[in-house]
Image 1: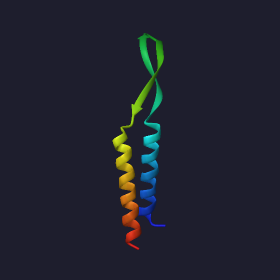
Image 2: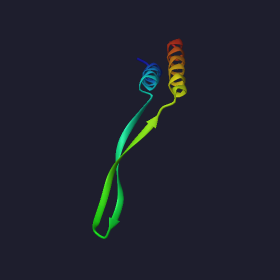
Image 3: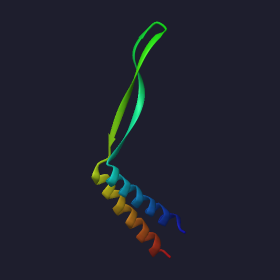
Length: 73
């Protein structure tokens, strides 16, 4: 299988996943206060939103890459 077809299918899958999940979140540990050797930390949840336009662009680009890859045979 050609590399361009694999990349195109991967773009389509990632674009579809971006449209379904619309974002993700992760947790980080941040220092709230530090007095000498004593340190107080808190877990903070961060949300990252993925715009719908980005998912649509990835799908369209993936389809174009697959079409061009299959056409060059």
